[in-house]
Amino acid sequence: MVKVLIAGAGIGGLTAALSLHDGGVDRVDLLEVAPQLRPMGAGVNLLPNAVRELASLGLYHALAARAVQTTEVRYYNNHGDLILREPRGRCGGYDWPQLSIHRGELEMVLADAVRTRLGATRVRTGTRVVGVSTGSGVQVDVLRDGTPERLTADVLIGADGIRSAVRRALSVEEAEPVWNGMVVWRGMTWAPPIRRANSMVIAGDGTRKVVVYALTPPRTDGQVLLNWAASQRLDDLSADRADWNRRVPAAKFAVGFADWQVADTVITDLFDRAASCFEYPMVDREPLATWSKGPVTLLGDAAHAMHPMGSNATTQAVIDARALAYFLATIPDIERALAGYEQERRPVTTRVQLANREMGPEAVIDIVAARAPGGFTSVDEVLPAATLHQVSERYAALAAFDRRSVNTRSPYDVRRARLVGTTQAPQPLGA
Image (tube, rainbow, N blue to C red; front, side):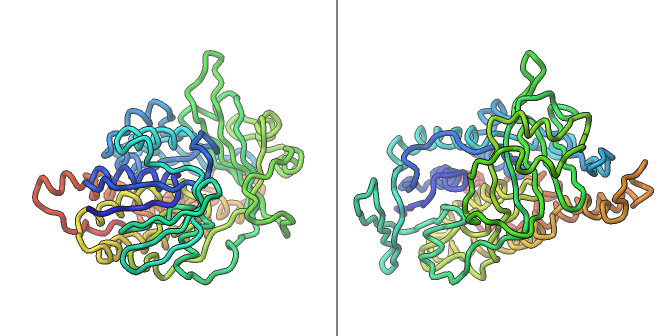
């Protein structure tokens, strides 16, 4: 029976473990650097294709109970003029909703499922990968609570983030993560909903941008927990570009958003009332020519770190995990299975990486800002709404979350494939 090691017990790694188990691969262990798994981070969005895949693992109700179903995305300029309204999830014609959820809540649902289905000891915390070698299978050198140990497996999956130790072990020659000149500040604030509790609002002026959405339904006082991310282009960044969680005062960046009022919300009020604000550079990685070497492969940010546009990074990690598990469960030859996985996923994620460098669907804000920096009465004065919708539709198609791609059965459901007697590779999505 195949033995799999997964470096990283984040969203991608945990989803991969559950998917492998679902496909009959039971010898799976996760290696996590953190001393314990606990809720951390801020909000993330799961697009309908990711929700479909997690539902195939029996997790839909647990996730929906902890999330907000996002029914629309509204794009504004910095004057509060509406550029575009885009229905999302079931309101947008999908069979599955789009879920806004705290990253920690999502990870805890996945971790609890791993403990229940695979066993309480499958996640080895305090374990750092320090070396990888291949020959007969794969040998992984780790430090577990500082003590050296060598582990062996048939497959190693690197789901260990943008600074992946597994990626380095593949002898990938690359520089530091690529900075695009933008800095992002994140936080969470209890406040009245921005427009509605199910709305995501994205506003910008061509240089600065803010994204706001709710992570909880309204409390009895009508307030929701708003997740926000503000970004601005800077000439220089003095901090280490990998300093992801640098706490900063709101006053450091709020001045750039003075007088921004969007959907009846004063944006700087959200910054000022947040318990904490964190700063980090907007970075990604150059697309790789290959993700795999022998019995070793990558997924999620380890494979294709991307800019946070279009709510896509978490979703792509989930799809990676499901696809990888499908190929490993249905193709006995490990290297052929990994080649099939990479052929399925790498073209899609490369397109998303490159599209996100051009601002993804949020490019509509920059297009309108360049043509009407002083605002407008109706967006049709600037560009026809249909033209702006095409930007969003093209992005959905290249990222394989258009309705045609999503409103089908999961192509990575191993149990169903075996039931109907076919376990060949699924049709590539988003081709």
